[in-house]
Image (cartoon, rainbow, N blue to C red; front, side, top):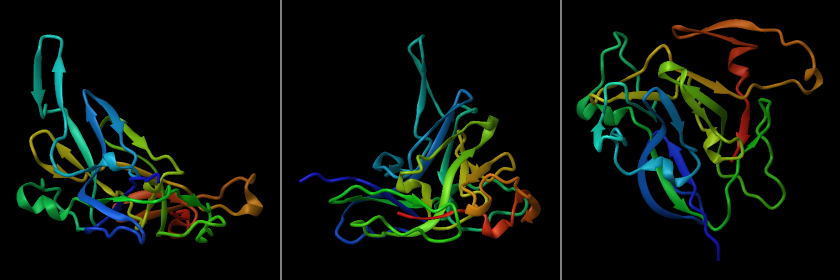
Length: 226
């Protein structure tokens, strides 16, 4: 019998869905940035769920020299809902564990996919499919140097259970982490099927200290089932 290894990402240690078998717990790697180039991971597959939290790569050059944790190397991880410091103080040491989202790799008897409604309604699963969880439609993210990556919308990694304006944290080569104003997240918008080809009416809203153009803000993140 074929088996599949999807990853499940949540703020705490997530349980595996019914009829699936737990393989291991880990930490949710979103993407890396080395030499000012970004490379992302699909949050719905097992390779993004690393068993150790670290700067996960080193850099080698043609002179047979490798360097670990260059000053311009970054890794980005899904974060928890832990409140960030108001004074932009760097996060380091044991306290980092409170900010890094956990994941589970599960062995499932069938494939897992996400279905997006592009409205505020939770979409129904296709006939013969069972719902696993519901959430918000996460499309892509960018960090330092406007580098980033995106999620395949068919992947369960595009289905985040919580909507947060910046759902990830940046780790530096020197071992510290923080949230930065040059980080952006992108989500599927909810649409009115009757106005698909009409001009959108944008309303500017404030979320915390950041400005967003949405219409309206809390009703504009598309919903989906995975």
